[in-house]
Image 1 (cartoon, rainbow, N blue to C red):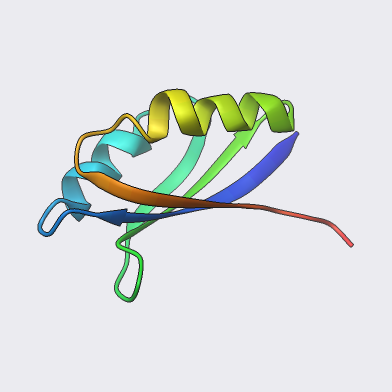
Image 2: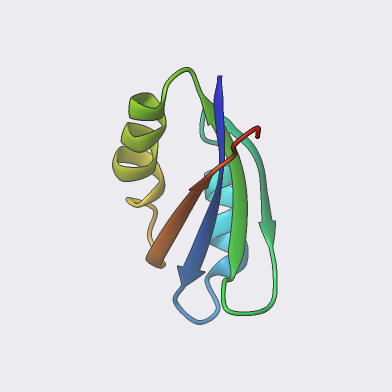
Length: 77
């Protein structure tokens, strides 16, 4: 199982709608509105890195109101 944090910038005033929409996607553990340089932080999981990448590109980035994402895979050192 691969997990990652997805940091999301949204259009002004869209953070709550984006977080709610993404929170209902399969593989999303949690989606929260935050303050700072990013508007929403998501924790997601998938079986493989490739599946995680497909989820981000095909599902997360397609949500209306998102302007930029940064995916940070969790590592266990």
